[in-house]
Image (cartoon, rainbow, N blue to C red; front, top):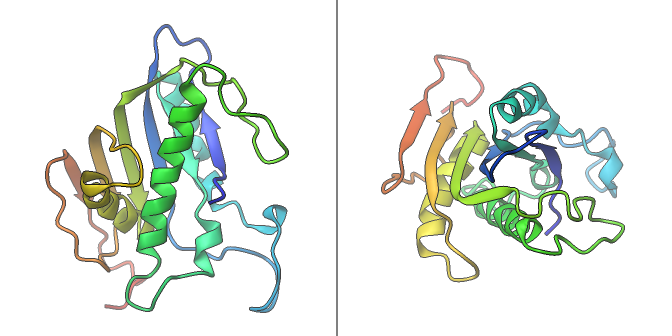
Length: 193
């Protein structure tokens, strides 16, 4: 699974920082015309950049913030009812797995697809993790709570808090066991039902 996104971290951390993962909503994923187009990484819209202001600000307060790109999932929804939630929660898990690996001695091995290297070695407190998602990203972080609780394909993460900002609710997950806040939209007209 390809993990792309925007990373902001404290410039002079005195101790390992808490980790926040931001998940954007459903937007256009590319500028390539036609449904049969083959995309490359530089053709995606980079919707995760919409949280740049938030990531930069939170980094000044001592947080490491990763705004994960879910652009690759916009065209590949896994069913008409799931709206890609299964893939989105797997991408959140893969993101946390990659941040955990980047925090370990040696960091992530360098190749043409990996840019972190040793940037984050020893700088993350993976016992203090928060998630925030908007719209379909809000549904994804809510869904991840349940997935994380029963995960068998990797570690389970100690979530300290989850915020669903104007979430859709395709999977009808009822979050429990984690401090959770939802901020509801008011007649924004984006989701018809």
